[in-house]
Image 1 (cartoon, rainbow, N blue to C red):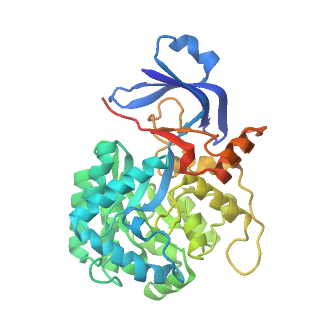
Image 2 (image 1 turned 120 degrees about the vertical axis):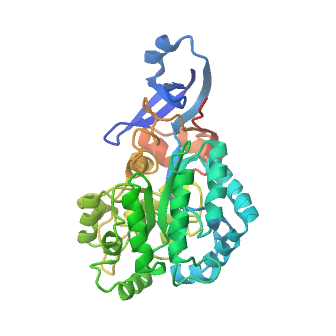
Image 3 (image 1 turned 90 degrees about the horizontal axis):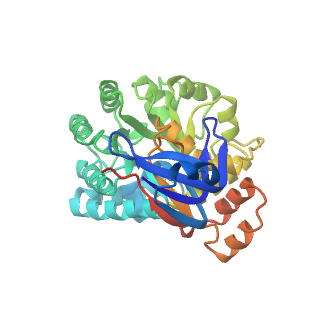
Length: 431
């Protein structure tokens, strides 16, 4: 066992923040040999029970759960910050050419190393990740994640039409490759597999149907794709699937909506779509920096409370503009306050700092069906955490010194923070 003494942030089952200004986090091994939280709370209350446990004092620091990124593209790290008129031109001019390079296993391996290092540098300890259509891209990323004990879920893109040479795959072979990758990687150490149609317009009916059959056969794997991000994309999907009630319903029609299914963006929804998400226990990955950068629109947080369905935050690198959870949380705050989709203004929603933080940790873990496993520092959770320095920059130090509440402290970190705040990222290790 070992312990750390510092301020301590965690969440209860209702998503309320718990904060100990002088806290103690005690970590030990579970029956499977994985490092987990044994106790967390007020130092004075816990210290007598763990007096013999070696303790690392971290005065002035905050221990918080490792961040959970619900949607990110590891092959797109080299196109982050690329200018484009919108989603579809951005894919055509930057994304597809960059992803074609992943036919080279050496390039995939080098990018995977950089990507995993960036996740950890920014305090992200769990991620749901897109690879490319090349099976070797999955092998490269899983290998690197495994070597770092990251909890990572990833999958090979399925895209057998409306895609250029170099990234377009063949329908039958893509499904064979997907099943082989599930068997090779799913459930190995802290890794999981996600069946990954890129988005409905780039998959034939046969490929989507085959993906749904795999999802039924392997009920504990994840599913990930994109939906309702961009108005031109929605028109395209409508023309390709004229019998579907909506773009989202295309996935339901092919057996791709269930628990552990995650769809990025979910901007241009109606309440029937929201009820479909709710009924199927499907989750949304909200990508505010990407949505702002590409001009796609804003996720309607108020509507997601009115018709509740699972959702959490995501960076969406490389359409997203930063790996930093602080940048993502701040952009989500902007999106919540802004008018929602459509021409007519709608009342915004002021997301509290505690809620923003929950959506990128314990709330995101719940949306991924990993509640009680990651994203929190309650007893039994895997011991993934970050050491935060609230004095990482002169301005941040000045502001946090004047914080009179937890909300003020967290909001100062969200607004003024970046990777410099992450002093250390600690990953749950096995014996």
